Image 1 (cartoon, rainbow, N blue to C red):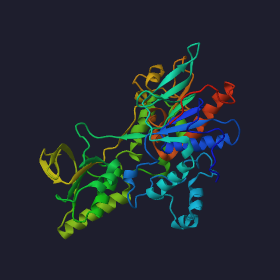
Image 2 (image 1 turned 30 degrees about the vertical axis):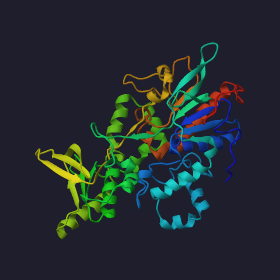
Image 3 (image 1 turned 60 degrees about the horizontal axis):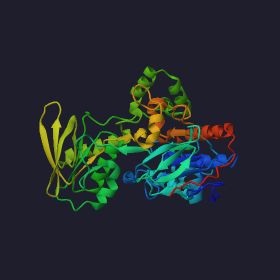
Image 4 (image 1 turned 180 degrees about the horizontal axis):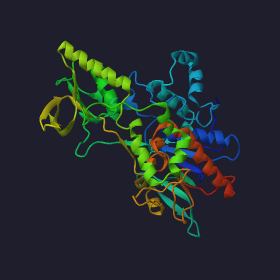
Length: 448
């Protein structure tokens, strides 16, 4: 595979670009691939990306041994859009000398460690287009003599202009969410930081962990801690009666198909909400049945042996978290009876999910020119372009955070390849329509 830059692409170009992507996770990595493949066929779209992390990384804190991807490897960065692409997971396996071995493994679901390695492998081929270690703190329109804003400036921490482009693509992913009143510390974490925090944890004195949450990540954390610390007790706390299985049956999984995205967009608001309600159990607060059964097996065997290390505190909620010497004190209320249990532990892990980053806060001055619906949500077209007032002709695109407009796959891997193609097609059509075959000569600050 060629690793040479796409024609004219550079993360440090002194000229206005066609596109600046904010964030360089799987969504914008898929976009970079789609752009390179588009550029090989004709009219070039110049792009660069800004990423606040120092290097590529995707949920590094949850790369637990043995955990697998929950979607098929065929839903990689490109295959759903271009099965013959050199940037697909199968090409990665061939490059690593493991294609035959993987086929013999007879699975559609590689480990997360392997899939992360695939993502890093692709990201390395685009390193020249990415300004790592750079945070974006806003954007503002660049107006011409007629008051029209056909370009935007991307701003850094001190208001410095990082670069200018005709299109802005936000692919900043999800943010870890902690319940109100809970603050992260050296012994209180979101599961997103699990492996990093465990590596820095002092020797256990309480020999107990508390894990809050009922979803896949929570169950995986419980499993990992229970296996990794054989002398420690692991207490799982959640408001449900038990872990609920994920619905990954074939017919229901069609809700993540590209055609389903189009149908969702065409549906009335009340139908969209009904679909989200009906099928939330494909993704939210659910656990793979195999893992549920494994945790139940362990808990039962421990009861038989008379030494219970895996404790399930169901129909319960955390009422308080206090710091104590060499540990954390967690107050747990049993909801049916009101009885409170106090657990002194070495650490408490909140596997309480993620929330999309607020695009309006990231857009800065541009936000006042974006159209919103009656609930304050950005209005987004089928091509993921934000609707703006007529004075802004620069394109603003969202990669993620549009579940209300595009359905359940909005923030998942399932549709990244197809969505990237839709965005590239939209930008290319706009560039052709405006007769732009090259780039402006005006000098502007580079992305750095």
